[in-house]
Length: 401
Ligand SMILES: Cc1cc2nc3c(=O)[nH]c(=O)nc-3n(C[C@H](O)[C@H](O)[C@H](O)COP(=O)(O)OP(=O)(O)OC[C@H]3O[C@@H](n4cnc5c(N)ncnc54)[C@H](O)[C@@H]3O)c2cc1C
Image (cartoon, rainbow, N blue to C red; front, side, top):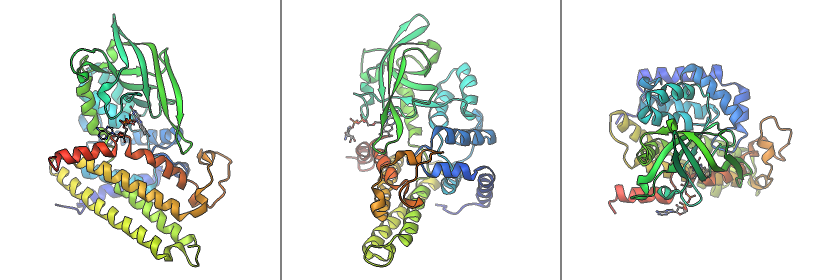
C-alpha cells in the first residue's frame, strides 16, 4: 500500500493549488461559504463550472477518449481535496458525473457529438428524474409511462425529489415502456428537455428553508424517439451503470476534516457557559476528539482504498462503506457544531444565506450557516442509497449474510 504522494502527484497538487489561487475569487468563495446545501446556488456554481470548463477540468473524471483530462484516481482525489479545502463552489455534477458517462457508454454517435461537449463546458444544467412517490429505494416500481406514437414517445406521470429541476434545462429520466415480464424489464432511459410543453415543476421546500427539491409532472409530454438512450426496455441496464457514478466524490474526508477544524475554531472563541472557553470544557473536548479519531480512521480507509484502486483493484462494497461513513460522520459533525454555537442555533433566517441579500443574521459570522447545514444534512443518509440500503449491501457482500 502506498499512501505517500509521488513527485509527479505533488507537482500536480501544486498546479491545482496555483490554479485555485488564480481563479477562485473571494466573491465566489464567500457566496459559496454562506450556503447550507451540498450544492452551491446555480449562479455561483455555474460561474465556477464555466471557469473549470474553460480549463478542461469540469469533466475531471472523464477519460481522454471522451474529451476529459484522463486523470488517474490519485489525481482526482487531489483535485477534489484541494477544491474542498479552498472552499470552491460545489457545482451541479449531474452532467459530468452522471449523464456524461452514460452517453459516453450507451449514446449514439449523434448523441455523443451533441451532448458531451456541452456537458464539458456546462452549457446545460441537468436533473435526474428517477424517484417517484411510490418508487425510491425500490426504484423498479416506477410508473411514469412512455407510449410510442410514430417517431415520438408520449409521457405521463410524475417524478419527485428532483434536485435542481427548477433551473435545469434537461432531465434524464427512467420511464416505463412495457408492463410485460419482471418490473425491471419494461423500463427505458430517456432525455427530456425541461421546456417541452406539458412539463410542470412544483417546489418542495426543505426543513432548512432551502429550495433544492421539486416534484415534476409530465402531462402528454412528447419527446422524439431519438432521445432514447440505449435500447427500449433496457433502461435498467443503463440505470445500473449510472449507479456506479452516483456515489459521488472519492474524497469525503477533506470536507469532514474541514468541518472539525471549524468546530475547534468556534470552541476557542465561544465561552463554555461556566467560565473559560468551550474548548476547556472536558465533555465537549472529548466529543470533538472522539470525532477526530473516527475521521482519521475514515481518512486512512479512504487512502487505503485509493491505493488499491490505483493498482487496478475493484472497490467492491467499499463504495457503500464510504457513503455510509461519510454521510453519518458528516451528520454527527454538524450536530456537534450546532451544540458549539449554543443559542445562535435558534434563528431561522434562510434569506440570510442568499448571495447578495441584505438580511443581517443575529449572531457572529461563524454561526450563520450552522443550523441550516445541520438540517440540510439530514438528507444525506437518504439520497444516493439510504443507510439501511448500504448496510444491506455490506452485510450481503462482505459478511455473506
Ligand atoms: C435531498 C434529496 C435529494 C434527492 N434528489 C433526487 C434526484 O435529484 N432525483 C431523484 O430521482 N431522486 C432524488 N432523491 C430521492 C432519493 O433517491 C430517495 O429519497 C431514496 O432513494 C429513498 O427513497 P424514498 O424517499 O422513496 O424512501 P423509501 O425507499 O420509501 O424508504 C423509506 C425508509 O425505508 C427504508 N428502506 C427502504 N427499503 C428498504 C430495504 N429494502 N431494507 C431496509 N430498509 C429499507 C429506507 O432506508 C428509509 O429509511 C433525493 C432525495 C433527497 C432526500
